[in-house]
Length: 492
Image 1 (tube, rainbow, N blue to C red):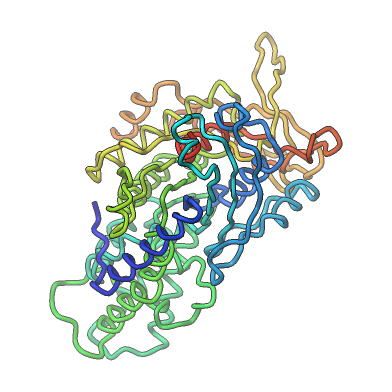
Image 2 (image 1 turned 45 degrees about the vertical axis):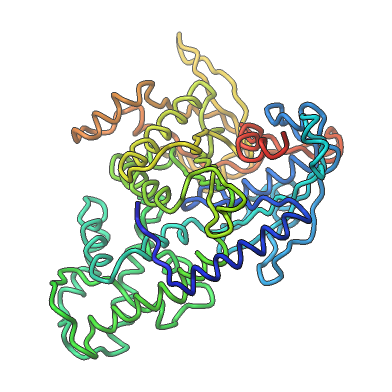
């Protein structure tokens, strides 16, 4: 596991934060749930749909406390952290339900508090429990999570790892300009701002190209290069890794020395505050991944997703919390890896999507040498944008999905207008994940059934508000199972 390096001062602040949180728990029991994901996996949609289904009595049959009628009231409350932006739940729901537009992607940390009033299933617990719990949902970009391993690296190891990653078939072409520019520079020459900025911009352009839909690569640190926010242009964000570094000491005032200094500033100014103020205070975690998109892009995207999952899981400390041990260092005791957009497949392939993702997670767990206890994998759709049907094609009956593709989406020569509903054969995922991954490791080609997956983006569904009791209920796939895993034990 990649170590998270923190100073004595950092550890003292972490301990103080946890003592403060636990003291608050004595007044109002609270569970802090982190929600993150890799690019375009649907973090905002997941939170909006989850909260909406809870507030509006959505279909959640596998969420035991709701199914059994033990939850008496659920309401939004004022969040406890005044310095953290509120998750804009109402605007996101308006866009989903009224405008049928997907919300904007997560750009920074935000937070929302739900309070649930319930009756414990245990007579003993009913004697001692207050019968309420607050769920603080903390939304943050997955790119920031992938920055945490940087805390265990120095500038040389960061540069060498980035250079090795850039040697992949897809990345090599995308990294060409950055590598050529870096190769033309004398790292021992005095640093000047124009050169530093040019190298940073070239490297950032490489990361942006890797993230584009046509490549869908996942492991892209430093994450703030892709979403700089109010730090754009600051020295802490104006650096780049240097390929071909040796072991010699950097000359004072040189290009290499300045890049090293700014890399360390990035860790201090950007990564450590996120770790200390947000990540280290979490109890449970959801990580959303777009496995389907990686599968449709081929072996390199799949391998990169597995690498990203290894780095993500290395950041967590799976294990059961105890009140005393968590005073010094909180432990995330449940992690859900959720493969999103299951509605882009026929239900016959949902289990296959889950098995493929589980195989990626299991390989990642083996790579970093941690226990898989407390980690689960599910295939979900936060918002079900399609329905299923069948069409006859000659003597065959094909399972299809029906939805409204987003304007501009294409299949072959057909471009969709964003208005017309369309029946699409989504393709099939391999039934045997083991055989599929053995073939990938041998360097085989992507099977035709994978290459032909129609990874079309759909508009949110039409929701009949009048037909829904208590307001519109957003359709989903397995959100109830996700809820049961993440918080069901706290309502027992």
